Amino acid sequence: MVWAWARALGGIGLLGVLLWQLGSGPFLSGLALIDGRVVAAALAIGALTTVCGAWRWSLVAGGLGVRLPLGTAVAHCYRAVFLNATLPGGVLGDVHRAVRHGRDAGDVGRGVRAVVWERGAGQVVQVLLALVLLAAFPSPVRPYLPVAALVLVAVGLGAALLARAVPDAGRSRWARAARAVVADVRAGLLARRTWLGVLLASAVMVAGHLATFLLAARTAGATAPLSRLLPLTLLALLAMGLPLNVAGFGPREGVAAWAFGAAGLTAAQGVATATVYGALVLVASLPGAVVLLGRRIRAPLARRETAVRG
Image 1 (tube, rainbow, N blue to C red):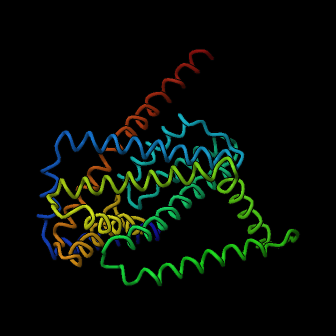
Image 2: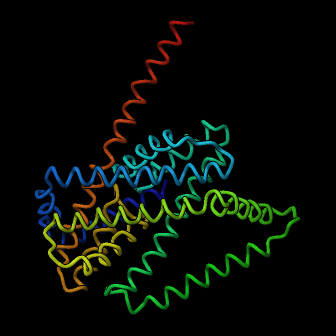
Image 3: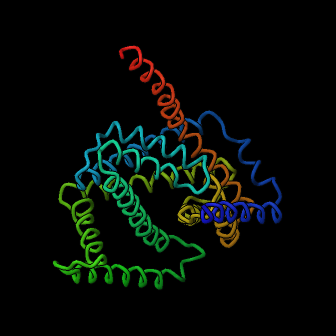
């Protein structure tokens, strides 16, 4: 609970600093430019990324031995996206779908691990694509990419060596946990029937999020070439992985302000772009509100029917 409040306060603090430095104009100016075409595009991109996320989750869950039909996964993912976009922290929707699926499948542990691994796989793919794109296009962080790449390679090699060093036998808690992690990764992510789908779904999702960010930049009035905007929006997208946010707002706006300013644009343009992106994500998540509302309506009806039959 303390950590949850600290994350929310951190996000509020970042937003407060931006408001103090830039005023409310950048937060409001872009929102007034959102029209029906932009909303339709956001909904379409959101549908694509949500279905891909559901497919990835279904593949990983199946690899771990907990069945998850694609239609059910899509409904759960839409609800999770909506909760992530409206509640502090940005992950409560994923926690909800993990526990809910685990309970439905009769194994909460595997249900939670399926979400952890599919989200982790998505983050790994996003970081790898980010390194490629940030190296291909000019950006404020380009000089530091070789060091970042070396660190990632070292971490990857360390993880691979650790996995090979895991003892086949051993009764210690560490040994059991290590064997469980290796088994999950092999079955849920690296199995022949899952790895390609996980990779493809994750790549399409990253492309969809970037497309939404670029749409937000154009809506907010950014006229720079796409080759210049792409790395800036990618940096803001990576910042969304930081847990210090309030319904997604916080680090995204701060990093966007810095990246746009460092690239020769303006900090206000970065904040406006990130704010419009947050609004478009909320719009794209609205089908999740329908899913959530539908469940709240169906549950009392089901209890009433059970009472009548009884």
